Image (cartoon, rainbow, N blue to C red; front, side, top):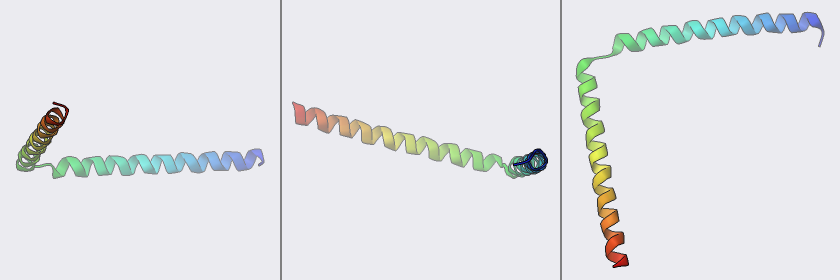
Length: 70
């Protein structure tokens, strides 16, 4: 690969990187604009329910293991 080809590739990579950064910024702006307080409340409620179910299943599993080893 010649020095000229390397420079061309570096320039191309720089342009691609700049485009990716602008796309990421656009996506970030869209995501910030789409946030809704009621969705946040619903999601946090669902998260609490999932963690509660996981804790319950873990407790039942621990109890079963304890009873088996007893």
